[in-house]
Amino acid sequence: MGNHGRFEGCIGVRQSIIHWFRFASPQSFYPLAGRMIPWFWAAAAISGIAGLWISFFVAPTDAQQGEGYRIIFVHVPASWMSMFIYLVMAFWAGLGLALNTRVSAMMAQALAPTGALMAALSLLTGAFWGKPMWGAWWVWDARLTSELILFFLYLGFMALQAAIDDPRRADKAGAILALVGVVNIPIIYFSVKWWNTLHQGSTINLTKAPSMAQTMLWGMLLMAFAFWMYSIAVALTRVRAIILERERHTEWVKHAVE
Amino acid sequence: MQWNSVGEFFAMGGYGLYVWGSFGACAILMVAEPLLAKHRLNEIRESLARERLADELDHQAGTS
Image 1 (tube, each protein chain N blue to C red):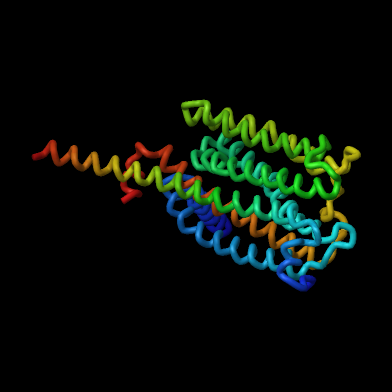
Image 2 (cartoon, rainbow over the protein chains, first blue to last red; image 1 turned 180 degrees about the vertical axis):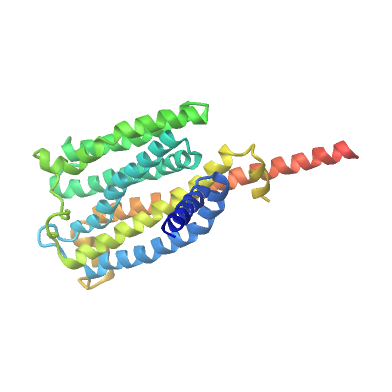
């Protein structure tokens, strides 16, 4: 009886692994992504509208920075997403390198432009915040410089992949670049602690209670969630295009597009 | 709510340029990016549809 049960358990595990690997094929991921995209757009829209409402109409005026602090509601979400997307991109690229799965490499490729956009927005909104508060659009501060390096890492990843004709070789080269670049993420995150920077310390961290008004915190978290859902929706749209581009000579693609 | 008029809202306590510059940059780029991604998907779909049509025409020409 005991042995019998264990045997069946093994089959159960095997079947669920097979079930999950099924989505790792471009053929089944393409329609799945198509079905998921509207839900991520809906989540992005709802949390974005709620977040904007709090940003402008609920969150109080800041005692030190007046209304200028409201830039935080886009600056922090964009900065968080620029770092988070990089980690996710490096994870998919690394998985593609290790297991040779096609969809994970395509997913890494689809995330790079969105990550670059978030890094660009982080730098742009940061400049708009720096000018009135520090008196300069840009300073060569550790936080700003490491974020600029992150932006260039995204561009480098995209340029490297575009420069290599064979997609499988491009995936491998890109994965190595992405994985090496991961070292920059803790540098950005801890830069305000490790160096004496002009950039302020984090208002939210994992160990201490947040040092900001509750409504400001909620506005920021809602906006961050909206940026997150946006990123997934866009990356899934892009990965669908990449799947069709790279699989265009396969039989299933010919039948997938009517 | 801290705004007494629409003008006050847009002025953002003197930080109008910086606040609206930031939100505006986000709005522009976050509208443009999905449109570009959608355009890329439509391009490849149309290209595949054309290819399929060409194949069908070839096939018809071959059999008739």
